[in-house]
Image (cartoon, rainbow, N blue to C red; front, side, top):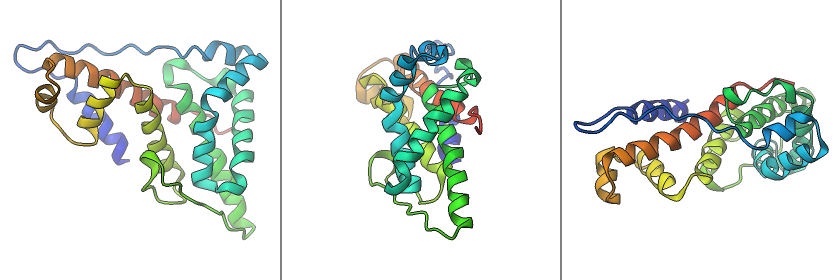
Length: 211
């Protein structure tokens, strides 16, 4: 996909050094504090997971299935995640990406059933955030854009600004350094860390179980 390829290219670019600038070291991932309580099987862990990521999953279901099915589908996604909690691997990607990967399979299954039964999907795309221009009925592309928007949302302000300038506005690292008045090495470090968050979301999405 275009977004995924762009992230990988930008991520590679962020590791390159200009003359006199130290190469940026790879970023170590941080384990989501929700992972332990979620995988413990406690009711509190499930509630915390839903409180943190329920809106993300619901938004995805809304944009791919429509309002009539979104709430039920969201509940089914979390039930499926709960049953598969031992299969989540923190080193393989983010919990948010993993959940949306499960939602992707759920949406595909429901859409197939609706089509077989001759029922309209009721797909409606909400003009909100990065998913505003996403084509209806394309679960993977909708998920990709939602994950990118979510990853950007949780970045520190400076890192979010620099990633946005590099990824969406196509500024070079040197231009960002001059515009933001920060050293080039800092620009590379901030972008590298920001893109790592984006990539972990997408990697978690790829690692999700089908059920």
